Length: 79
Image 1 (cartoon, one colour):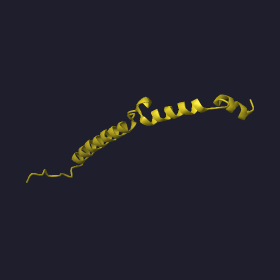
Image 2 (cartoon, one colour):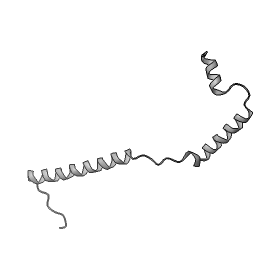
Image 3 (tube, one colour):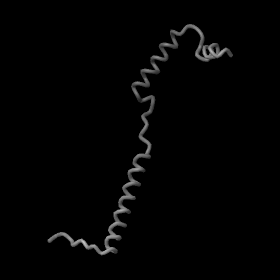
Image 4 (tube, rainbow, N blue to C red):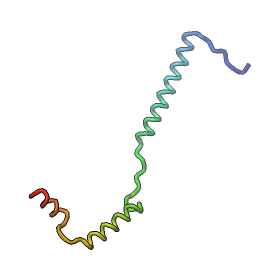
């Protein structure tokens, strides 16, 4: 019919296995490369969460009374 006869000739089987191994190696390479490609990084300034954080930081800084962050750390460390 339309199918080719499968031979059990050792040379033929070996050739088919070599082709399969080559295909598998190629697929593995593609999968590994696909995993190692860096994912696109969204610019921090474009993220709404980043804008919210910056706005909150400005509000806190405007209302802050007391030591600055560096001075507070120094006082906690006893420097």
